[in-house]
View 1 (cartoon, chains in turn orange, yellow):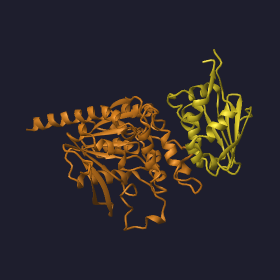
View 2 (view 1 turned 180 degrees about the vertical axis):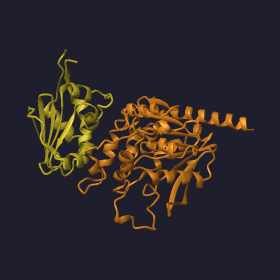
View 3 (view 1 turned 135 degrees about the vertical axis):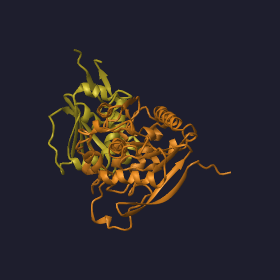
View 4 (view 1 turned 30 degrees about the horizontal axis):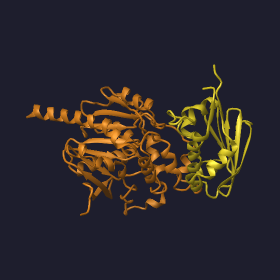
Length: 292
Length: 138
């Protein structure tokens, strides 16, 4: 008898800014919906271990999508995307995630995003208050305006698709299981050539809450920040600065984890994520009880 | 204050790099030189068609300017930083040359086309150095 994972993949037609996208997503579990956003240059496979964790799926509906141009979500057929350099912009990124949650008719969803997805968490809380019951910024910061010298080589005729995996490998903890670190890096060799660099337009450029983080209303969308000890990009200091700037937000240091905690060591990461989800679930339940 | 000294055997560098399957996979076709500055010492590796054909130990002559076409890649750090770097596991952010340059006193220079194109092989050397480092004065 074949052994199948309890994960189902589907395609959804989603229109954002008058462009239709065929969006791939995977889901598993039942309960409060949790939308999972991958990092720059990668795709939803980063969440596969969580989608197969009964401790999570017995109580939460986990949904991991691929952004357009990532994973199995192809570029749109209605515009000539090949005539301009790929770039991910903040307005599109926010609109896409909110549209996806609405189209899937998610009720009181929780958003969990890592790296550029972690940056997006507080952006969603600021610009779409109450759209999500809570957001979890994994490796998210106020701003990351670091002009890394290798950025040009993320899309360069003299650099192969081995370079991105090698650089991403350096961002993980030496204590995370090596096969999972290698798997996390492997996915970076499979992205569309300009996509990782283009995603950094948002991650390293447009995202900046330095002046506006204080305006986030955590009574409408709770904000949690998680930072991995070995993440040299969104390092723990940057992650804590984000939480400190948002009234009511919390920060937790993830010991012995790096920039990709959900895929480099999912067991350890779940030990940090699950208490947050349970706290949100308890709050939603209490709120429902008061209304009832 | 105790002085830390980190040294490597040139012969061990050559053998451990050439014998390592991962390094050899990612160093393929590489022709040029790769210099590791360790405090006041330098180890310059000559890369010939992807193999380490020679390792020359000499005094560190200072940082080289960055520019494409030189064929020379340089990584340098004070001995104290190398002592942290070769710990296994290394503490944050001494795990890799780039992270150690972003957060500590490592510096990366020379030919950027080779530095970044061959970063998969260069990254692997950090793990190989940890196996053969000799640290005195800790």
